[in-house]
Length: 174
Image (cartoon, rainbow, N blue to C red; front, side):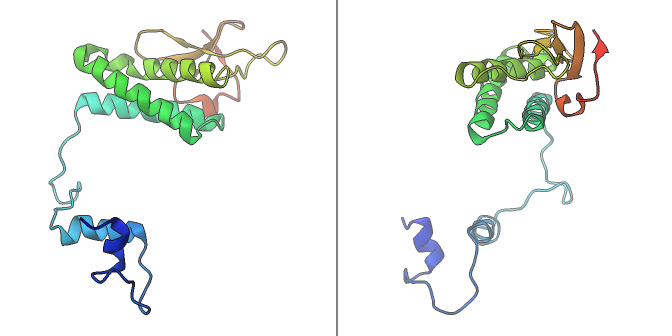
């Protein structure tokens, strides 16, 4: 079996001197969908499989937690890997208890918060309390739908999980 570099270089193993430079992405897309005769699935040609409620819940949880991480400029590659690891674990959990799909966003947020605490420190830091020691927000309810980031020190809901970027304005009482 030839390596990817050898396949991209051509049949003889030597890249021709003339001709356009082909990016890896273009080559891979061309190889996967056109040369291998695979059908490109999309919503436009009607061959896209519907996404299960389980997958919808997991994708929504991933997106909400990544949004909060990005709002705090914490979405580095290793942190995103923590999110992915949590989603994998929670996929098994929700497969065992399908009624728990509504709770998965809060659980993924807590998993990532715990992983960050072990590795880097507290996250997310409370944007409400300006004085005193910095402290992290908590997810409430711990196991329930519609999770929010809450500051127990000030007694306020800061933002819904996935909406930390809009929490700079102020908080509503919890």
